[in-house]
Length: 307
Image 1 (cartoon, rainbow, N blue to C red):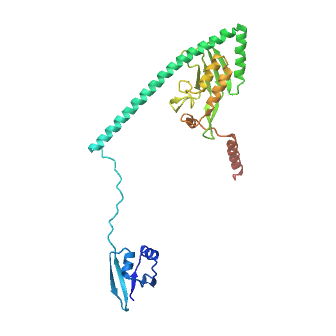
Image 2 (cartoon, rainbow, N blue to C red):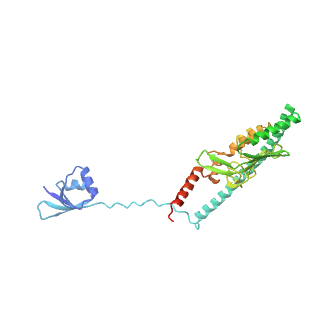
Image 3 (cartoon, helix red, strand yellow):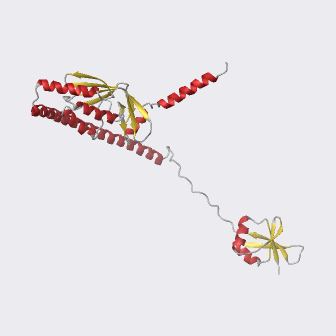
């Protein structure tokens, strides 16, 4: 029975023979010897033809297989950007420009609608606040002395708030000066320095801005231009929030101290939302423990230096 030598078999050839259950012998370090039908071997290896050359030994042939040429599989070409000089490229560029103009028009219209609604809301708030305040006064009909006592009590309660540094009364307004406020976020573990604030309570403000917060340390670029705090616009208005209803009722009932406590809590806490995350733009507070550790480390370094 004839035997066949295959020189330099590839890993793929050996794998196919192994999977087909064909045994082979090592003929040389780079050749194998098979005692199977060469046509069967050719079909297993998926060869298109073979050539068997006789060797010096009887019934021993050196075989060479020819495999069908496989078409080269080219990777799909990635779509390249359209050339700006081509008609399609110019059309695409014009479409992008028109889309940008349209987007700016929609944004401008939405902003104008929001501002108009805010103005209408401000007028409604001012009207409601004045009516509620007058109702409060006429309902209880306090004497002048009782009214003065009430304001004195509010003044005492305002000064008892830890964050409040000073309180000043002006005609139709109450100015509350705070110590430097620090805010934390529900989305981070860091503490950020907001700065000192002036909170103005104006029950008779015709614009409806009955509570305004001004950062005495300056404004920062945040959610909508320059902001006093993450949730306070540049003009001191508090962003639309559920606390506005509570503040409106508190100011209408002349509960100014409670209103300031609500505002302070609002300023010192940022939620996990688009506006709240602007808190990260305010400077981060370095903990006292870290400061003491650094100062101790520096002190030790100074004392151990050689003369």
